[in-house]
Image (cartoon, rainbow, N blue to C red; front, side, top):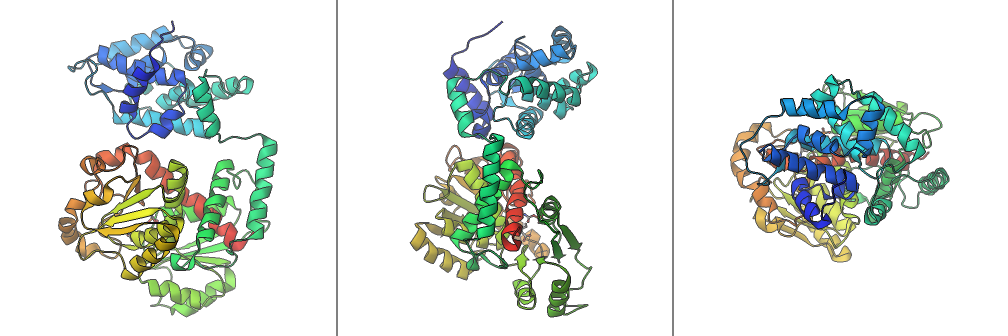
Length: 521
Ligand code: CP
Ligand code: NVA
C-alpha cells in the first residue's frame, strides 16, 4: 500500500519534530521521511503526544515495499508478527492526536544511530534500512525489544543491507531534489577520484605552503589564517576518506608523541592517542603526577630529556608560562593541549564543525559565546577573527577574556571584516547568531570558586529561552565536558548533541592534520 502525502504538509510537520536536525533531515529519503510521518500518525492513533521507538517501528513496517520491510522479509521475519507484538505491548496515552508531538529521547537516539549507520556505510542518504539498524542498535525501547525477541540481529541486518547495496547502492527511491541534495553532500567518491584526492592531500602536506613544518602551537597569536586553513582542509580530507585508517596516509616510520598532562582530559588525550595509532606512530601518556613537572624536575630539564626521545610534545598545563618554558628549552615542536590562558587546538575543531554545519567560514557567520571569558574563549576570539567570523561574547563583569586577546581580535577583525564584540547581556549577544557556544563556569584549577561562580553565572545558561534569540537553524557548540543544568540546560544538550559530539569527533581529525603538517609524512 503506498500513501501519497502532500510533501509540504509532512515536511513542515517533521521539520518541527526533528527540531535542530535539519542537516540530517535533508539526507532522509522520501520513504524514510514517510516513516517518521507515519510514526507520528501511529502515536496519534494511540493517543500519545510523543513519538517513541515502537511508533517508528510501526511506521517502518507499514509499507511492504520499503527496503527495511524487504530486509526483514529476507531474513524470515513476519511483518504481521512484529505488528501484533507491538500492538500487544504498546501503551495507550491520554493525549490528543497531533498535539505538540515530539520524539522521545530513545526515538531521537534511533535517528542519531540511523545517521551513524549511514555514515559507517558511506551512504549519503538515510533510508528505511538505516532507521531499522538504528532501532536495533538503540535496543532498550519497545521496538528494539520486539525486534530482538523476533530474532532480528544487528549483524544479520547489516549483512543484508551491504548485500542489497552491492547490487544497487541507492536502494531507497529518492526524488530529484533529494538526489541533488545527496549529490551535493556526497561523501563517497569513485576510487580513482579518491586516489587523486589522496595524492593532492599528500602534495599539500609535503609542499607545506602554509609553513607548518616543525612549528610549535603555543598560542593562536602565532598561527596565521593560512595555517588554520591548511589544518581545516587537511582535517576535512582525512575525515572524508578516513585515509589514515585506510592506510592510505601514514608515516613510513613511526613518530612518537609525549602527552605531558598536569590536568585531567578525555578528548584531548584520546584524540591524540588515536591520531598517533591511525598514523602508525606511538603516543606516550604521562599523567598528572607521573613527572613532577617543575617539582621533581625542572621544566627545562624535562623538555630537553623528552626531546632526546620523542618527535613532538603536547602538554596540558596550569600556567601558560610552563608551556612557553617547555618550548623554549626543547628542540622539538610543542603543542599547547590547554593552559590557563588558551586552548588553541580546541579552536581548530570548533572551526571545522562550524564550517561543516554552515558550509563556509567568513563574514556571513556570527558565533555567540556565553559564559566565562576563559582559555576556550581566548582561543575562539583569535580563531574567529582570523577566519573572518563575527564573534560576540557575553560574560559577567569581571569575567571578561584576557584583554590582550580582545585587543588582538579587534585588530585582526579590522583586516578580515570580523566584528568582535564583548557584551554583558546574553540575549543581546545571541541575537541573530548562527552558532551559540559555551563552556564550564569553573575551569580546571578554579574548583574552589565553583560555588561563587554558579551564582554569578546563573543568568548565562544556554537554554531554550536564550536560543529563541538566535537564528532558527543555529547550532550549539560546547568544548565539553558539559555540566547540564549549569552552563547549558539538559534539553538543549539533548537537542544539539549530534553537532556537539561532531565537534568532539573533530578533535581527532584536526589534531591528526596538525601532526602530519608539523611532522610531515
Ligand atoms: N575539550 C577538551 O579539551 O576536553 P578534555 O578536557 O576532555 O580533553
Ligand atoms: N575551560 C575549561 C576547558 C576544558 C576543556 C577548563 O580549562 O577546564
